[in-house]
Image (cartoon, rainbow, N blue to C red):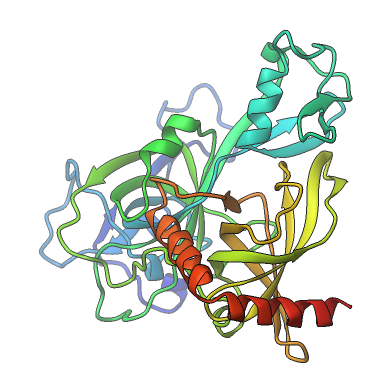
Length: 380
């Protein structure tokens, strides 16, 4: 708003459409004899204001929200009153627990479920952090509070785009929305490709900005309204399987979904990372393109003891680097990555990708053998 005034875009006599303004008290001390409304100010945000036509009626307009397109939002512009969006990507639920010693631990839904089950008869109720034995089961290793005393909050992220097309913005970056204090029902209710009108979210600057575009987070005032998809958004791209040979040619900030066959694997190791015990394993994989990918796998669960030849699907894996000497693309998993060992009704694209790859392997045994020989020569 200040920049608009300085540049002369906002002058005395201009009309503004204002939504989400807040009444705040004066920053100076007031005496008790002052009028009860003295010192009050109306706090405006740039993201909640738009220029109004000269003939717009002044006064209160009921049920009129300012819907902003993503490119017109200011990172430092305060509360965004309304967005009309398509959910492009939904990531898994994560949980953050603040331990009695002040440390914060982030866990996947699987780990959190094991912690909750740990309060049953099978586990010692005086213990907290899950540990893994040779069978991948959880034991525990540190003192923990009672279930009622645990300070745990759930959250997940979605990537969003505008529902409506804007001729001024033929190409548009997606934005990232962090849903705070979420639960499993919130996560289940939101589906990719669905349209929602979201009210009262705020921009923020994350510590680690993984994706380009704006970052928003929900507030106590945030509410959602499902809306009918009457036409396809030009900015929305459904999930699909990316070929191993194409990954290093894509935007490195993207997450990739792959269906691959494991050619070779390193020995699984248990590592303590950020107060958690995770299985870490190195995999060399390929697909119909016969290109090779090396995956740094970090999961709270272990693959089968002999994963060679197993077909798996991985969603939300991240690009690390490309080695042109050996023509190998290096990838890694994160807490938001998902492992599929068989088809899933909720991920039809992955089920089709796994089935297509299995059919290709059965009819192209020589090609798989050739890639296996290449991997063995590289590793040796």
